[in-house]
Amino acid sequence: MNWLLGGSPQTQEHQGESSTLGFDAKEVSNISSFLGQPGLFDSQKLHPLAGLDRGIEYLDLEEEQLNTVEGAQGLIPSRNWTDDLCYGTGAVYLLGLGVGGAYGFQEGLQNLPANSSSRLKLNTVLNHITKRGPFLGNSAGVLALTYNLIDSSLDAVRGKHDDLNSVAAGALAGALFRSSAGVRPMGYSTVIMAAAAGAWCGIKRVLQ
Amino acid sequence: MSADHTRDPCPIVVLSDFGGAFSMGVIGGCVWHGIKGFRNSPYGERGYGTISAIKSRAPVVGGNFGVWGGLFSTFDCSVKAIRKREDAWNAVIAGFFTGGALAIRGGWRHTRNSAITCACLLGVFEGVGMMMQRMTAQPTMAPAYPEDVKPLSA
Image 1: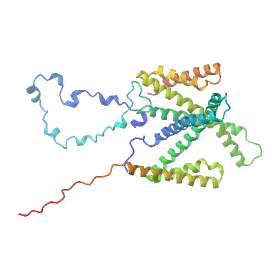
Image 2 (image 1 turned 30 degrees about the vertical axis):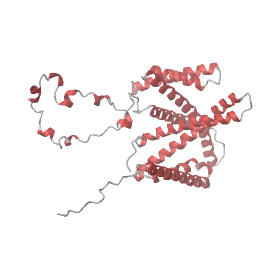
Image 3 (image 1 turned 60 degrees about the vertical axis):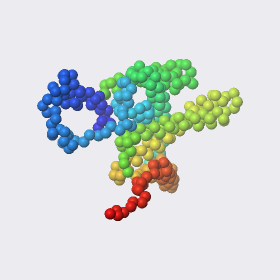
């Protein structure tokens, strides 16, 4: 379940030398002292078929390497910035689509034409869903796309990923989103998006 | 056929495909409708026309792409789970269902035609993909045997 819940890859790397070598390298003074250690040339361990009872070891393939930017280990383990982009945009887009669709659904239920056939009722509700859902989803998706692009660029420039990057990327994305509507809407959208990015950082920290 | 290691495992790859297709649509829509808005605007308002065309159209293109890609991925995963195998038919079946689902409000005939068209399109894609794979694959070299081995005479 590592791929879904974002396991901790750090724990596998710091096992310490003593467990891999079989002895502590710092305590070795000369050859005979370490050749004479008991259990070093254990025929049970050196046999070609030794260690089969411990299960299978898997190769780490090159393309499955996780993101190495400092602090970039998110909820879902990502390989690079395209993973972040796709998952972030997809999640926000689906969320927008779902929320907008739910809003349209209840709006459609309220506006049912009186004394109409069930087919007409169904059509009314579907029309309201498809009016609200895609609009909210598209707007949210475009915002998330801009945010992720700017965030990944900032990560690459600064060489690390932290909350400051996220908030700055949110502010820039919000400013760009409403940049053609005038100064005041642009300011509102900047503040809202920066706050949303900050809130997301907090939620991520709680969930992790 | 071995598993594809460049793609994530099934339930969660749907999310990635939604986002990827949406991003592709938005960026492509920016280019497409930017040029279209620029060309269709009168002189002096070309910059404004470009911006407003992008603003109104690019998210819609992105949304269409995203819904198509996400639905396709969902159906692809479902078909994989039901058939328990990975081959080219998965994409064709998933394309059939995707085309049908997207056209389901247009009536029975429209749904059927759209599903069949989509399945054929995906079939062509898969065929072309396999052909490209076969063309770019390394040719298998036959082992070089020595030409004329003299029979043991002694």
